[in-house]
Image (cartoon, rainbow, N blue to C red; front, side, top):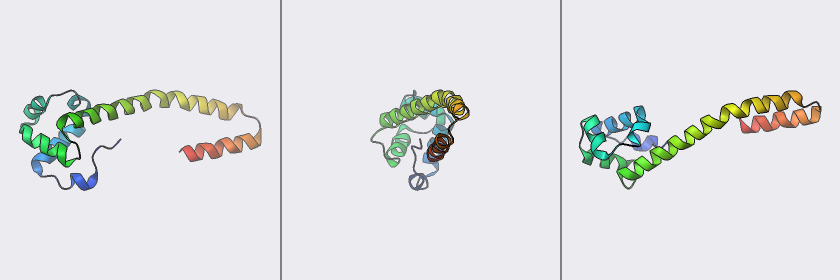
Length: 113
């Protein structure tokens, strides 16, 4: 999930870009940091961090953290189930003998991808 829209990011000043880059590199860590901890880590003021959050469309730093943690949860959920689903799909494709059904399964797989 992409939390940051390109047209918003390109309007950031250098300090705000530092916040953005740190968040991209330490996404899971930032989701649990207080604004003061983040401020100390990147050597910028809490005001700069709040301004960054608002420019990205969040009402507050806490809203940004919440969105980060939710996107992290979704990514972890997809990572958890995705490897399990592939062998099941492969087994189904190899075990199906009916050609018409195989064709339909192939078409369904193409729609999913």
